[in-house]
Length: 461
Image (spheres, one colour):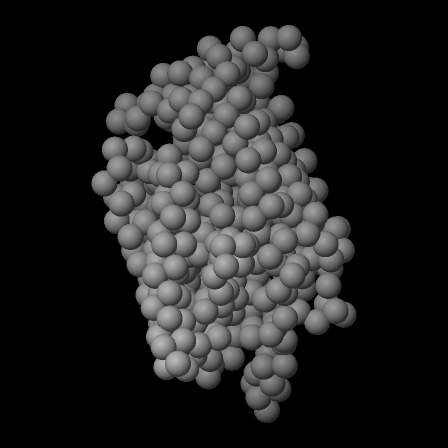
């Protein structure tokens, strides 16, 4: 009876899987400050900051790249995602269904859900490095690929179960947790970095820049790591969340926003998380003499409080990411309740988290998953804004009862195919890829609609 009662309550949670968000569930700015800050002052920040150190970024390149790149990310949320989100009030998957038809959406949703599961898995791995500290667990190293101990597998499994539980409870519970957690997490990041500055030789504010260049961001990569420049930092800061803004995944979140300008509130995540937190964790990495595992470096900086912050930071990011994955799978499997597919996504996520390579190769993975999902975000952007201005129909698949949109499919696969042959590092491919996708989609839609509508005119005559 208790189990039946629990499942009935979970079934009753309404996350507007297939319809616009109702007026009584619209959220104010405070919700989005907390959500962006909670998601982006995160466990992964304890990984990304040290990886910049490992790749030999100079202090000038780091600070300059973060200022510019994070600004571009904020503008992408504000001008690409938020206006469409507040006009349609639909999640990414139902919005895309109107454009692509259900068959192509099914394929996209499986890919999308797997990408988000892997990303959430990296965040669970981060939290596990802190949870395992009291058990003297062997920490994964920079070059580890596979689980290195039974204790690692057990700890990851426990953390994954907790994260999945929060994601099942829905949007309101996720934002409630973030509202409580993010101010404290930011304070811990800053306090832990300040605590080790003296160890690095900084005894006054004026000495920081000298020490930053000589002992933290020295411009010399660790053995086996490539050299990063200003451009790597700028494009990574802009595109590390490409799936969320240019890829339109945050339609799912910003559909709850009262006004499109709430997209600018992403600045709380970018400049507190992807600036302050990356700088702070880089300082911790330098003080730890190249240690990468987040739990140990946070513990070194500020003790048990730092370790707890790694756990909480992993949860606040993994929760909304797994929530998105659950919605993607729910749209692909409409006969299942959202909470059931979220549990299934949690199982996949937790299994992926057991492989340390996901965490240690986070820069490359984040760039890859953003690139894979980006073209379909461009399809949404072009279909909503550009096609009507060119005399073409938006939502063509829905209007004409099409099960599969070949213009969207060719845009997705064609963009990725061309990008695969461009002579650029993966961090830079998103920009030319965006213009390719826009051009492909408009061209293919023009051909499709000329043939389809031209044929209808001929039949009428």
